Image (cartoon, rainbow, N blue to C red; front, side, top):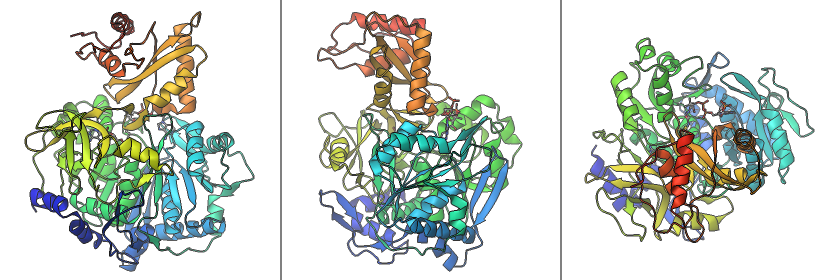
Amino acid sequence: MNYETFYSDSILAPERFWETQAKEISWYKAPKTILSKDENDYPLWYADGELNVCYLALDKHIEEGYGNQTAIIYDSPVTQTIKRYSYNEVKTEVAKLAGGLLALGLKKGDTAVIYMPMIPQAAFAMLACARIGVTHSVVFGGFAPHELAIRIDDCKPRVVITASSGIEIDRLIAYKPLVDEAIALAEHKPKKVVVFNRKLGARIPFKKYDVDYDALVYGSEEAPCISVPATHPLYVLYTSGTTGKPKGIVRDTGGYATALKFSMKYIYGSQQDEVFWAASDVGWVVGHSYIVYGPLLNRNTTIIFEGKPIKTPDASTFWRIIDDHQVRIMFTAPTAIRAIKKEDPQGEFIKQYDLSSLRTQFLAGERCDVATLEWYNQHIPVPAIDHWWQTESGWPMIANMMGVEYLPVKPGSAGKAVAGYDIRILSEEGQELGPNEEGYVVIKLPLPPGTMKDLWQDNARFQAGYLQKFPGYYFSGDGGYKDADDYIYITGRVDDVINVAGHRLSTAEMEEIVSSHHSVAECAVIGIHDELKGQIPLALVVTKTGETIEHFQLQHEVVQLVREQIGAVASLRDVVIVERLPKTRSGKILRKLLRSIADGDIFQIPSTIDDEAIIDEIAETLNEGKIGVFKKK
Ligand code: COA
Ligand code: AMP
C-alpha cells in the first residue's frame, strides 16, 4: 500500500474513509450518519451508531472461537509473578465484576474512579465499567491524595475502585489510606470503595464504604454488555493543562473503537493474536489505548507489566520480557531506553536474550532524541519508530504507518501525518508556514474519530484551550516544523506543560503549590533539560521581605509540599532562591527566558523586559548552583 494515496484519501474524503473503517468493528446498530456536528458545532462521528467496547474486546472473540487465546499476561518482576489470563477467563471476571457494580447501584451514565497499580484488576475494572455503560476515570497511582481529590470532585464518581497496595522498586505503597485521605479532602463523597486486597501486607484501614473486590466478584452474576450510543463517554482521563486544574479529556465510544482498531492495523502493523506490549501505565492514555482497549479490540495478547525498565531487578527486564513472551511489537518512552542505556551502555544484557520475535519498537511520550535512537539502532536490529500523540488525541497523529508503508526514518522527526490528521504549522497570526519554519502545530478540523470529544462538563474551557486560538483548527499546544518532504519535527510544548520521564505535568500547578509556602513571595517553575528524564522542574523563588529561612530548609520544605500535593512523580528537586524574577513591563514573568538561561541556550534579551540587570543576577545564581550556563547573545 502507498502512504501518499492512503493519506490523501483520508483527507479528501474523510466521511467515506471513516465509513469504511467503521465496518472493521461490530456494531449493535451500524451508524448511518458518519460525520455530523454536536450542539456546539464540533464534529461528531457516528452519531446514530450503537455498540459496546467491552463486547468488542472480549465477548466477540469468544463467540468467534478464540476464548482460549491468552488475552493478558501479567508480568510483575516486583512480586515475581507471571500469570496468563485467557479471553474466557478475563470475560468471566469482568462480567462478574460488572454484575457486582450493578448490585452496588451503578448504572449507565454514572462515573467510577479507578486508582490502581499495574495489575490485571485495573484492566478488569475498566472493562467492567465499559460493559455496563459506566464512564471510568483512571487516576495514575503515582498521584497524591490531593490530585485524586481534585479528580473525584470534578467527575463525581459513585464508586472508587482501588487496590490495597502498589510497589515502587524498593517500597510498598499502601493505596487504600491514600484513597481515604482523598475522599476526606474531596467535597464529593463516593458511595462505595471497592478494594482489591493484594495480600502483600499493606494496612487496609476499614471504612464503612468499603467493599471487598473478591467478595463482590464471586458473589455476583455475570452482567451482559449493554448497547451504548457511539457518542457515549467511555472514559474521562485527566491531564495537565496550563492552570492548576487538570483537564478531563472526554473520549467517546464508537469513534475511539474504530480509531483503535484502525491504528492497530495501519500504524502498528499488528496482526491478530500477536503479543503487543506497551510498557506504560493504565493511568496514562497509552495505557488506555495500547495496554487495554487497542490490543484487546484487535485480539492481541497484551502485557500488564508491573515494574520499571531498570532496577526491577536490573536493565535486562525489557529484553527478558520480549524473549519470555515472544513480544512482536513493543511501545515505550525514550526515557526508559535512556535509563537502560545508562545502566548498560554496551548493551551486554541485550546479548543474553533472544529478541528475534520483535518486529517493531515504537517510542512516544516525548521527542525521541537522536542519541537514544542511534543507541537503540546500534543494539537492536528492528525499526525504532518515534510517533507523536497526546491524551487529547487518544491515538497517534504523526507516525510512520507501519501497516501502510514503512517510510525512511529521519532522526529527530516523528514521521509524517497519520491518515485522518491534516496537520499544519501556523504562525502566531494564523498564517501557514513553509518548510522548515517553526510555528504552532495545529490540525485542521474535523479531527478524525477517537479524538477528544470535549472537556468533562467544561465546554467553555475546551473551546478556549483548543479551538479559539486558530479558528477552524485544533491547537495541540506543541511547537514544530515540517521539512520539504512533509516530515514533522516536534520541538516541544509552547505552554506551561512539561514532560518529566514521559509524565505530563503542569508547571502552573507546581507554582501554585510552591507559592503556598509561607516564606515564598513569588515564584516561577520551569522545565529544564535533564539527561535521563528529558525535562525536570526547577523552582525559582523570591522569599518574602525579612524572611530568614535557610536555602536548604526552604528547598526541603518546598520539595515535600510538591510531593505531598502532586506526588513523587513531579520530580521537583531544585529550588533556587533569587532576588527578583525577570518580568515584562506589564508584569508577566519571562519563563521562556528563564528556561533558556537554565538550559544554557543562546538567547536574545526580549525588548519587553522591565530590567535587564535581573538576567545577570539570575544567571549568576544558577551558575553558582551549577544549573545552566550563561550564554547571552
Ligand atoms: N506510585 C507511586 N509512586 C510512583 C509511581 C506510582 N505508580 N510512579 C512513580 N512513582 C514515584 C517513584 O517511586 C519516584 O519516587 P522517589 O522520588 O521517591 O524515588 C518518583 O515517583 C519518580 O518516579 P519515576 O518518574 O518513575 O522516576 P524513577 O527515577 O523512579 O525512574 C525511569 C526513572 C526513567 C526509569 C522511569 O521514569 C520510567 O520508567 N519512565 C517511563 C515512563 C513511561 O513509560 N511513561 C509512559 C509514557 S508512554
Ligand atoms: P500526554 O498527553 O501525556 O501523552 O503528553 C502529550 C505531549 O507529550 C505532547 O503534547 C508532546 O508535547 C509530548 N510528546 C508525546 N509524544 C511525543 C513525540 N513522539 N515527540 C515529541 N513530543 C511528544
